[in-house]
Image (tube, rainbow, N blue to C red; front, side, top):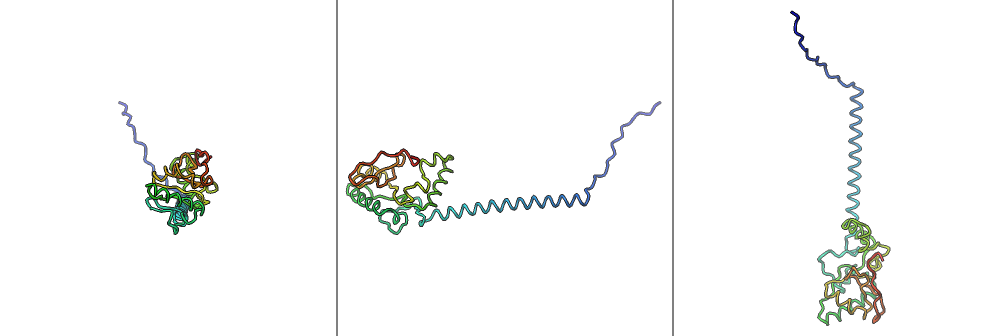
Length: 205
């Protein structure tokens, strides 16, 4: 009888070992990759540190920054945001405040006055990040070269009662709300006792 055919397993061949030259090339390639990754990490850290330093320098009293929740009045002459306002604007605001308080309105508090160009730029970039759109952000924050805060010609006032009083009576002192979308923003925009000009829709106008 013929012998049955039995399938033999394929012979197991020893794994081929890379040559010394191949091993050297592999190590060199790995070294290049590691170096590139380290360089990229250093670049990221440098940019992060630079951004952090920029934010730190922008958010200082000397740059006009007033921390949220801090009470600053028109009489805090040692605060740069107040001290660097246009003197005529500051005088008009103080006169208006005295009359408003006599009418039972709370004292005016300033949330923002004079700003440095760096602080203004930081505010714009922060608004772009918050809204996710440069055009929308520009409706609320002007560029440093167009901002009336940078020149010391604008101030943001709270509380609401003070804003409403100024909107109604501010023209007596030359003070006007200049942007329709910013009830808190006032500038000298008319002669005392004059008529305030039509408000611009926003900071892009």
